[in-house]
Length: 153
Image 1 (cartoon, rainbow, N blue to C red):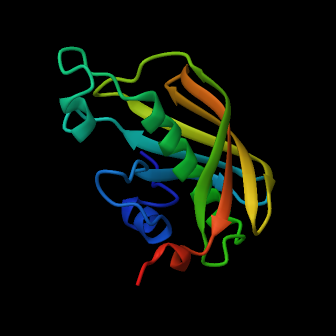
Image 2: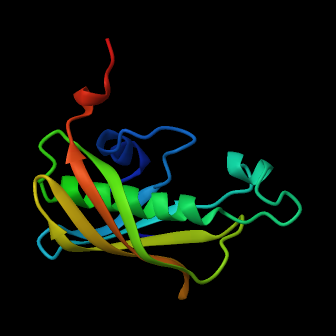
């Protein structure tokens, strides 16, 4: 077993998300220059969403797979050094295809390839797979925003 490029603690240092919304367990590979990243989400039966999303036949919600892909894209932006302390805020999902269900016990591989990333926004081509079976694919766009603008008071 090879060591991950980033473990879950290093992922937590990059992403502002926390349980139950931290959906990336580790980064397996990344090449900031080429604009590609491969991350992993271990899907366990203990996930909170399985309590209500078809408890008799649990399936990971497709929107959460898209969120895991978006988080992976956010990590890529940080690795490229283009975030400048900003967070990636989801703007849109285009051409999403839900091809295969993801169930407890699956290891979800999250792949993103940069189409265009600047210091203000970006777009990635994303694909989530279990082994060589594609679960979801989409183009995800996001804005890079200062998190201070969301604080009230």
